[in-house]
Length: 390
Image 1 (cartoon, rainbow, N blue to C red):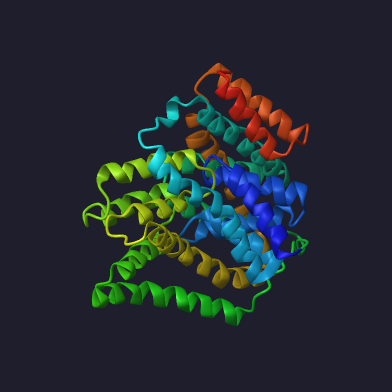
Image 2 (cartoon, one colour; image 1 turned 120 degrees about the vertical axis):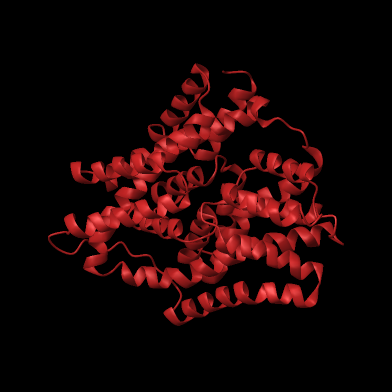
């Protein structure tokens, strides 16, 4: 597949994928497992599990990995660029034009939360049937959902995946080797180790460079790189850390920070693109576009390097029988995490009335039984909610 085609596919997803990282993964599954068959359910679940293990934005890292599998390094870069570009550009405008917008009171924006319910329900439907076909794995999935609901947070999610893997290794050992679902990684292990070395070098050296140089652009890069490198759980987790970095230094007022956060809720694609708003709106930035670009690259770069470093090792590990046993439990746990996220925050934020439920059920029907493209369902639900169907 040529590079432009990869960019075009992810640009469409970046413009229509509302609802946060779990909903994004649902859109990815519909596009790349169901529609395009780039990889099967087992390989997709393994990819999701890897991204859940890594710090950084899980859905963006999944996009990078998918682009890497299909188009090598250019594909990885263009997949990220396409997925991040719509929201990055929108947030620069939202930061100026949408201050004070009450997203909860906007019916069309609420419709985008409703469509996320349908998209995640579709992913649960398909992944549950494929990855939890028996009582044992269904029990692991439900147990993972209960644990993730009782103990929310990124560390609990990692613990649930580890526990699922341990259960799989002990009780789900297959009688023979499972059919391998290949992920055609186009990188060597040596390249992967170099990417991990660069990740660590930047993490250790950028604070020293920021202090030694005293330059604002270096300090800006350091603040956003460390935020992207050390945070599990995605955009909502990184925002308090960025507030502690930006507001006390006087780079942004608290009102300006909250305006950017509110605007990010209205944008599609990854929440990490709010970095573009923060960098552009900073009082210290000599050039708004340059500041936004530096912040955007810095916050995504760690996750990019981690995918390049870990994916070649992950693909090799997947070939071993012991790992295949572990994967049975891990994949069931991933379904459980998706189930927990379906309740909170997807369902709890999206379904506020009987009309919302009706709209979400209609979207689910269109996606699952009528095979409607997700972007069309997004437009339908936003338009229906905007017209007052609640």
